[in-house]
Image 1 (cartoon, rainbow, N blue to C red):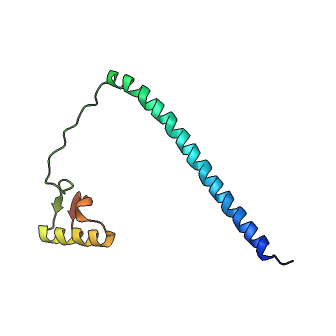
Image 2 (cartoon, rainbow, N blue to C red):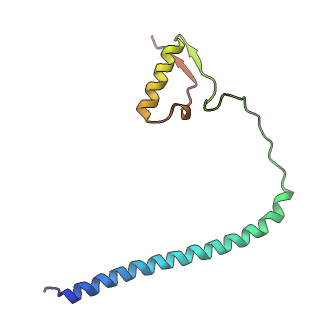
Image 3 (spheres, helix red, strand yellow):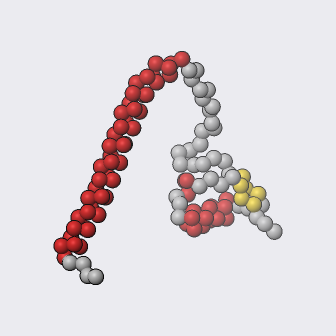
Length: 107
């Protein structure tokens, strides 16, 4: 049985209509969820001041873009810098986003 052009057009339009109906339904569900969240946010600030503020833990200050202290064992700074650059290049990540804790030469 072959399908005529009119049948194909009707099925295509029906499929597109189903997709758009599902998208509209999702939009409505998200809008309703946002309305409930806004109502909860209005009620939440009244309870927030009663809670105690969390303690701030002071971390040691490092230069901007660094990730802490690096300990070198049996290696010099030049070799450590080259190893860190190679690792950053292989991972495809900026060097200031990586954290090296220690570098040790294996013998």
